[in-house]
Image (cartoon, rainbow, N blue to C red):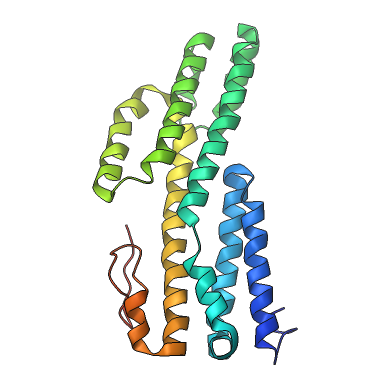
Length: 229
């Protein structure tokens, strides 16, 4: 729409981009899968805005700068993880009410999603439910750990390794989140860079002083950006 339907109408193009971003935010309320869809949509918005920046910056770029500055990807991720934990907790409650043989069948189904299926084969039903509840509590802790300073966050991740060795649900539930965290960090940097670039096109290089790199906390430099490994 921005590239083809809104040619010659930058204000309407910006309106379309903002509407697309809002659509992604609405979709993100469906736990991790919805959040990943949201990230994909926000990526399309950033790509389109940067591709057409020379046209958009002169007319309505300030609205896009505000949109990208207001992006709260980390908060969206925390909310998605908490929703995921609530869904898993309801499943744990359901399993706890089932007869042992039905729990055993449920474990057999989980094996298809596990990197090491043998780790589930030796679990007794009561042990499995206890391990699942422990992993769910770690999901909730993960959401809180994202707000920690970098060094504390890394230390918390290291602390997971001991539990990961004894609880197969930790790998099953938390390993996918590590990939989503990386995607979130990358999107936070992309959004901040897009805002900084549009601001520079409007107000010149001095505008960078008001647009810090979310990784370092320092202003972006033209031609150089950092990323969190």
